[in-house]
Length: 207
Image (tube, rainbow, N blue to C red; front, side, top):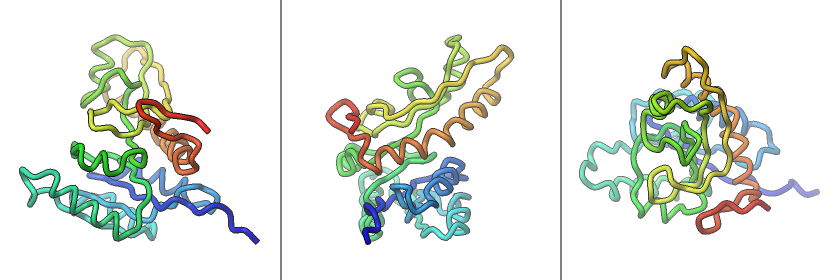
């Protein structure tokens, strides 16, 4: 009897409490989810998300970026070694607060995804909710995209929209977007892990 296709061994990279990590871990619990979260890795040994992952029975690791100050690629090579030892096939960035070098991005091309709190290509970088409010847009949201060397410029896999309401401040808007992030990211991960969404050059191909 066939046990079905093998689930993709997936690592989540975090820097903090890991709220998106928790939603991904929950979504991946059923045996028919195409990704299996087998590692949570952080650049901050004190990150709260590591304890939450350990409580869920997931292997954790930390590669502190601070001793590598001034040599980002050496830091990433140390991370890459941990990923290799754990036989990771997909890498998911969930509040990972380090800008990755072209070396790492190229190494994981097509197997590295990120969630960004805006409707890309709008509002790249940080403070996206402030940017949206200052721009006076009627809609805001979040995007899951393949990571490319240029920051927040990778092809979009999926997006979710929220209205910008009268009286919104950054916190209110951020909370509304985060609720959608927790729904969107597992769906996008499933698309990539199952091979239904594939990076091809500058675009995403649907199979």
